[in-house]
Amino acid sequence: MIAEQGIVEEVVGAKARVRVEKSPACATCQSRESCQEVSAKDMVVEMVNELEASEGDRVEISISSGLFLILSLLIYLLPVTALIAGALAGGALARAFQANPTKGAIVGGFLSIAASFYALKRLDRSIRAQRRFRPRMTRIVQRAPRVHPPDASTEMSSAGT
Image (cartoon, rainbow, N blue to C red):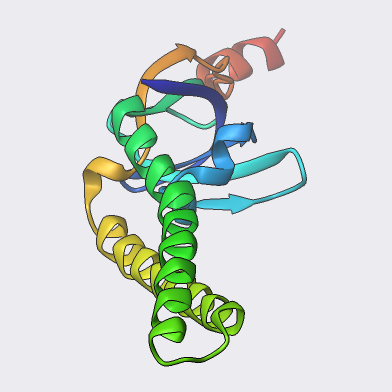
């Protein structure tokens, strides 16, 4: 599990908004659509409040490291592999038609990398709909101090003295 800690900023119904400090892992995270960048260092992640955390609580959020690794490899390796394969195929196809192999490699590489980005975009949409790819609140690290309003009976007794 890849885990980060954050502070619950807001609880609305069954959802919580948690402010976390961005880490290098955020750049490749498939769940980044559920995050909103607040500053260069911080972002807000919206998630199901399974632990019934309250505003001000420090919580741990996590995502499966296996899923994270697979998705990261896809994001980085698919476009590079597509570029190389497209360039080789474009060059070979250009040679077969007695055209300039360099131009064929450029066109083939461009078309294949564009196709890989389109495929990743489609994959991203299908992954976004699946709950298992979203970050989860795994534990409450520290409860925020609760401020209770003064009791009406104590106010009256102290006012009478």
